[in-house]
Image (cartoon, rainbow, N blue to C red; front, side, top):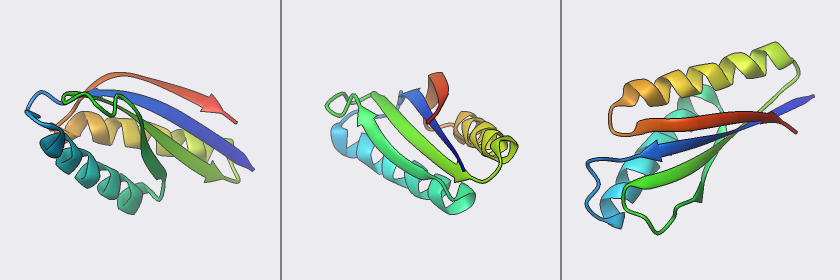
Length: 93
């Protein structure tokens, strides 16, 4: 069993309030979960309007598959347009 966790730092330039930020993040988290079958949670910058850190977890029986899923998730976030990817890291647990 392989568990990969990625921390994804985001900048949300259009968010002018926590309510707008939550709206974007809720939509993004649901889309990631539904499309890639990953677990997603906001883990940092909860009180900032335009910053967020998401943790994305993938559990798989093959390391290569888990790597591919994380790569697709990162590319999806980059192409979404509502949030700009600042940085991300991947760690095996």
